[in-house]
Length: 528
Image (cartoon, rainbow, N blue to C red; front, side, top):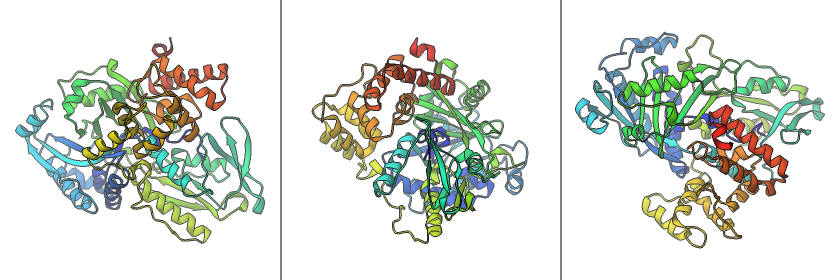
């Protein structure tokens, strides 16, 4: 059960990277880096529809800086502002990274360029750049859709598997054999009991709050806030030359400028979240992002008029006391406890974790559950294709062949390309559904049709307009919304979700408020 929509929290507020975490080497987290690069390589194979190779370049402005400070940071994690990381330190880190990346991987080794060649490749860089270091990680442009694919695979595993969004765990009722978890339906307000042998708490930054609601208070979590902005800025996009720019800002924070399609993602901050588990991107953070752009691309002018979307989330990190936020471990651990009321076999809480290692930590967690139930694993997921990654074309020739095979009545090549990008090879099922009835594109976008909205309503647990705009599609992320589009989606969802005219109007208002309050998308311009 998920309190909100799937991938609504920290999972949907990520930097859209699947990466080994080169900077974690500085923390001494070699196990995590090794696991991360193995999982990165694996996801490139089993989820190729969403996880793609990402060329990444680090601009370097000194040669020897940081060599003396690095051991202190490695040992204490509590130093103040770190000294700049120079070429020697970065070279050592990338060499280790290459070593870890060899297992099951096919990405190229890193390469260093001197100033002249670096500026030839990236002419907008600061002219005092001394080197660039380029290596490969991976990206995930649509983490929300990857989440849905994993979910659908789980549900398809057997009739015993069930999942519901907008349902929260609010307490424990009864005791002993009669104990159960009290669940609340967020759409109707109805509460009901559900018995289980094992309860697994994977609510991220809310782990402590969830345990408290279940009568087992904990103090495991100490999350940090991370914000991002999305820019429509052709000059900055061109300056990146198709690669992520990953670098150390003047305050020592590792930040990124990352082209996604025809937009540019800029992030991220790393601030203790405290009690605010639903943060928004602030004016101060936006100015920080503009400053970090100037730090590497001083000639590129960026203003607020280029922002099309902002988002912010809380990393589910462990409580870290006086450890600096940037040095808090991104690794995970599983905490075990008795289930309050004496019911079942126990309760497990997941502390930490990140997108890149989601499969590995899920497998670990599942093994712990199976052990409590007295069972062993019968199916491994290490090489199991995820959702629309099954049979996904491995090269451009294969993509074109797939598009040609699925182009026909009602589906032109452009529409087929959009559907393949959105669903992977599961697009075949969607296209078959679209052709079963009369269909037409929405008036306000060529990326969504009337019957596709029906498909989402019937097959993807859509409950609100914002679920379509923010998580079933990337329309909001890319700044492609309009007031007409918000209304159209609401009107076409209404017959499938049983909404009358008043409920439809409220859904438009709800979506507009979410866009304005959480993502700084001007509601007046949308609906006025």
